Each structure stands twice: as structure tokens, then as C-alpha cells.
Length: 350
Image 1 (cartoon, one colour):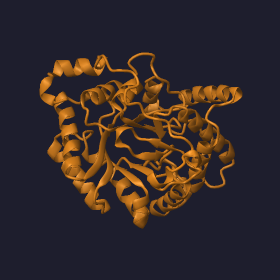
Image 2 (cartoon, helix red, strand yellow):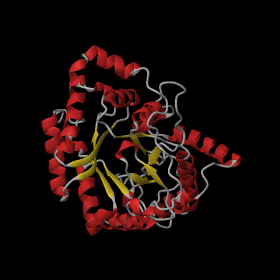
Image 3 (cartoon, rainbow, N blue to C red):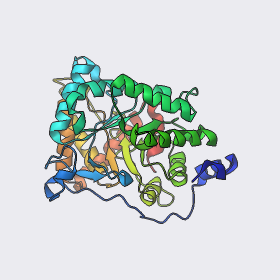
Image 4 (spheres, rainbow, N blue to C red):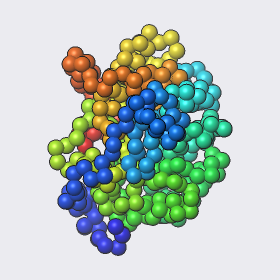
């Protein structure tokens, strides 16, 4: 849909209420099966591993691993390694486990992961954003400036193109004017036409705005938003419904509720490591019950990568006792969220 067909009043009404009449389930995202059961699919899947599950990323057609690597490396200082050394070890284990997508939300992350991948770049889809020079910065709210921002990060990372360019938008996306929303989509479409991005999308912490954007702009192929083990769809006008109708791929950030589900620090030799690994798998297994979502945790050690891969191999449906434990764990995590991440509670429903 073009930007010239709606005024700001209509835009804001759309953000709040969403477009009506979307057919439930149209262009639905299919659930990936365990790789070892996908006869004949291995040749079509990048970095295929028979022990990994792969999911179709909406209308991009990409088959991505059921758990992928999120770009943020929070708490990585406890690993007592340099970032470059740490990321190389993590990326190496991701590739061994059959993971095939890495998401970079900042220019620094794109540069670091490009270096860590080296010749293995061809085995992984790379999602790129340059958040410092994207719409959260008011100086980067035109298509011209945004495309230049992408070119900047591709040049610094020595990348010819991004598999996915997903622009990092304001946490409260509805604070963007309609004109800015149009500029965002124009930049994305331009980059795709120029061969700088194979697929395009956005990220935000504003589900109402995301819902409007995917319903209004058919060019969007991928979205990123918070999705924890406590998140569940609204009975009506859910963002998930809009994604199914438009066949838009979805990556879930913050699967561990900003690490609030963990007891320990993730440092080597941490006495809480076994318990934290178990908690992490519980959360991922529950999230993976939703075939639309591909969680992208920010894993900071090869051991955490292995634990995430193990969650994929374990059964999806939690035992009754496990489900009850996870419910209590998430209630405790919600209460433990710091003031800076209290906003995550808004994502109990989508």
C-alpha cells in the first residue's frame, strides 16, 4: 500500500486499532519438523544439521534454525575473554550445531560477527541493523540517510550485502510520524532493489505499531519483537494473526526475560550453571511450541549454544510439573525485572 493514501489521523487510528478484515491463517507460517525427519530437505537448508529443526521464515522462504543467535552479548565480560575471541568460539559452536542465522542490531555487532565468521560467512544468514544510525536517532529518519547508514555498516563489516536488513525503530514505534514510517519502508525497498539486502524488515517494542506496519506495508518480510516464556496471543487482533495473514517471518527477542530467569552469572565454573541451563531449556521449549516464532537469544558461551541446541532436541510439550514450574519461574522473573526493563511486562500478551 502506498504512503499517499492515508493522512496522519488515519495512520494513528490504524496504529491503535489495526486494519480490519484480515483472513485468519492466510499465508500461515509452517512449523518446521526436526531436521532428521525432513527427508530430502537437507540440500535446501543452509548449514543443515540433522539434529536441528528448521522453520520457514515467512515469505522470505528462508529455512532458519529453530533457535538462532541474537547479536547482543550481555554479561560477556564474565567469560574473561576478549569480544572477538568469545564471538569466534560461539559462532563456531553455532555452526556445528546447525544454527544458520545471526542477528546484528548494531554496527559494532555486524563488524564483530563478520570478522568472527570469516570464510564461514556462506554458511550463515546475517541479519544487519545499524541502530545508532537508524530512526531511534532523529537524524536518520529519511530514506536517503537510512540507505547511507546501511552502506556504511556493510562497508565497515566488509559485507557485500545483508541477508536481512531489519531497521531498528523506536521502542515505541507509534512515536514515529507516518512520514517517517513511509521513509523507513522506502529505504528498505530501495536497498532490496539495489541488491544491498535480500530481505527486509523492522524491529520495535510496540506491538500496536508493528501490527499496523505489517498490515499496511506489504513490502515488510520480517519483524523482531520481544517474546518470552510468559508471552501469549490476544484472543482478538493479535500481532500473530496479522503476521500469519501477511506471511511475515518473526524473530523473538528477550526469550530469557533479560536474563531474569537465571540465578547465576553465566561465568565459567558458576555453581548455578546446571540449574540455569535447565531453566533456559524450559523457556526455549515452551517458546518453540509456537511454530511462528524463532527465538534469538544472546548466547555468550559455546556451552550456552549447546544448551539451546539441546532444547530444540528435547520434547516441545512440557510435562505438567514442568509447566507449573515455568509459570512460577516467570512470575518470579517478572517481579525481578529491573526498572530499565520493566517495559517487558507489556509483552505478556501480543
